[in-house]
Image 1 (tube, helix red, strand yellow):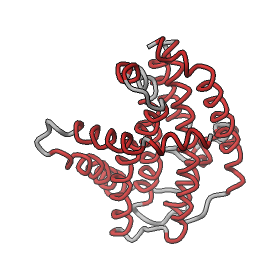
Image 2: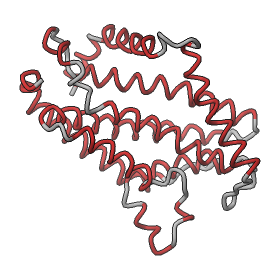
Image 3: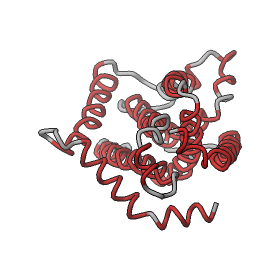
Length: 264
């Protein structure tokens, strides 16, 4: 593990330049350029606020603010967007860079680091706008915001492990790409992102938390909607999942790394 991290650090210049290049190319032919990275999430925040807070006047249990439901939605959808963006890159991660992998010697996991950083850059901009929105509306959660850090790190740990697994598997089994899209759709609705566990009938409520990601997103809702620190014990299944996935990813990479370029 330490050797892998050292190699990635040695190629930090290559990783950072690749991140900058992808960011530049994404908006190269656009009239407004990089302004779209702000306009898209800003539009989403305004729509959620106007539709749910003002027009529908949606309310959440034990939440007094008229903005509570729009904050609830954004606090789930924004981190899911980060997770989904990262996972959706996985199947094509090594395949799209096949020519580069064949020509240049560099750690293959650098491509994973590039994908992770690109997703984080987009998320950082969107999340910053969300923070500004909370401050302007007087709904900033206070010191409980610090609890977002371990939740986000745990989510990224799981996500990055899944990326490595899917990226390697898709080299040998090309069905992985469409299955990933289907899995993300199921994952979105099986995780309490746009609904809370309290909205589910009591008979089925416990089943939601069989999904280890549920505790993470419930944690985001607790922080941003109610200003509470999430229950850390509820995150144990997610931590176990992260360890298992990272072990599987490491084993798969060790066993198949030498064959990847030939298959490409």
